[in-house]
Length: 599
Image (cartoon, rainbow, N blue to C red; front, side):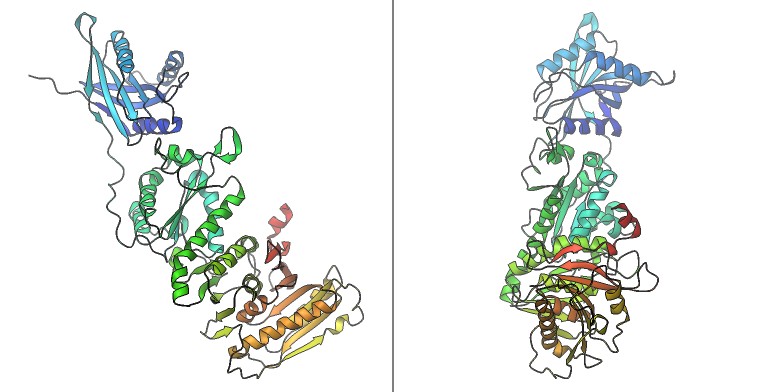
């Protein structure tokens, strides 16, 4: 009767250790010792310890015997007398696809001659992943037999991936962020916020993973319409089975479609230069090496914040490029939806070319300080992308704080974009151009502020302007702004409307008239810095903002009761004509007390 064939059976922990250490040491060989027990003819491997070798290379590994014995003793010293776990063999890696060499066989024979039990050898080849097994057994008269044996691997955690379904890439879909939570969460949050502020809808597990089996919900997200993805590479990514076995394979499949864009955010520093990223690290950590699957793709160095901006710019431009042909052929406007209050989700994805989302402030009515800082970074990207689309018009929907509306308008100046349309919550259209049916029922009143009549020459560098396009304007808060300003103003002026309600058809004429008045007042005092408190329809703020491209304007927001401030407070400074504009400064008044104290 023949003896059943022996096998080497790897526990999940042993298999993971071998694969992880192989990836970590690429492109060099590595190895160590196998621990476990024998069950009949089979070798059951429970643990694989890595023992660093001296002079390891791409085709050589010699383990340190002294270190191996020390590690074995350390492992066994606290185990109970009924625990049969012990030394059962050796393992090492071959970066290139090849089985055990003649040197491996000779080493195994030597170990088996001094051992009374069979000794296992496991050789791991990383890509494509394979395990080769040998068992060396001492025979009669000191002879040693080495036989090939099957490696029995633990059952895979995940079911095999099916074919990628049609529609998995969608030009209207969100951007997927793939990352390791243990050390990549902070970076994922930064990228998520920046992408949303730049007009891209984001899918991230924290917000968008719905109840149910995680792998099923994740597969739905990866196959039901994405436009792009960002892979965040941090040191702990090597331990993420979800990213390695589920997310990455799907993202690589999606990236075969030219309509999809996969960005790699690399935060692994080179050993010899802490400011430069290691472009080979993603392949090693995700066990793709020696293949250069990710190394041959563009990677952004996010050790430097400019790398994050690079990713945002690349993805915004990719989105606009996917739409530019239709924009030009259909002669349609670029569409932008903006929201600065409701919480953002991936289900926001729609047909708008860009969807700007700024998280609401946690403290009162003022815009989020962090959101304004993000807009300072992303508005130039949005402006360039809109211009690159080759459009002559932009259509804006949604709603936002008035300061943000002014900033958005300033990012789309009349010198760059011919026509701006704003659709309000009632569906009415407000446009920057004069309407042929303008009823001309509303006029503007310009009046000097009486509080400053005696101090009009106190400071020729600053002008305070109150624009109120709502019924019964209350100048009390504006009075307080002037009275409590740390520096006096050269002059202060109120611009108000003659009618309680503005007809949207009047928006082109009135917005141009308001901008002319503001520019004129600034010019009269030597191109003074304008301090603007605007109170009126959101749409009008956008249309006025786009015409302030020659001014430096400090924009104020109303802070209501229950907040740390009551009245108008400065939130941002616009200077569209500068290289880094339109937002050149975000005021500390929008920061929370704890943030302000920390600065």
